Image 1 (tube, rainbow, N blue to C red):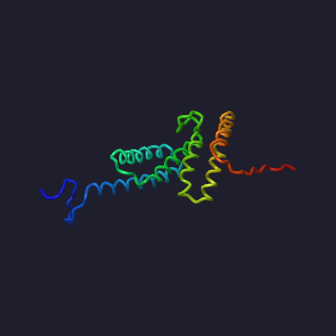
Image 2: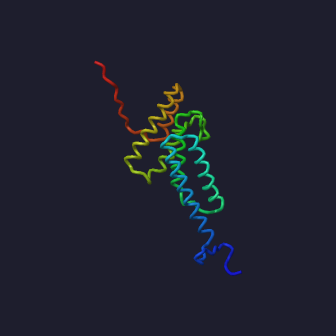
Image 3: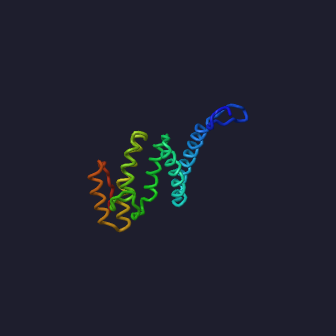
Length: 171
């Protein structure tokens, strides 16, 4: 038989390499699930977000295990960041092997790794929000000791921006 087993003969009689077609389809699937994750994050649909994230991760992991180089590392990093932010108020969730690292604390180094692909002003604003919310969530949940540990960790692990706090003035 003429041609290799990796060739498909289409209705136009042009030969198409199966591996190339699979690569294109997988790339479309990754793009689709990435867009879906962004929408689910926006809509704060946590359960569907987690299900879709598992699907995306399985596709990307499969590509990497088959020695295909993933062309979507930034999308995967963004998804890891969004997952941590999605779980930001759930202090029992851990993404790090250190038990005192909350999801928002864990999101900070990931956000820093995206610095080169994001607008610098937006990056700085989101970094500040992550820092403030990392402590604020602990306080809101009544975990003052964890809030203190979080602040100490942040002082050690990142450069803290100058944050202005406006207190209401009573007359």
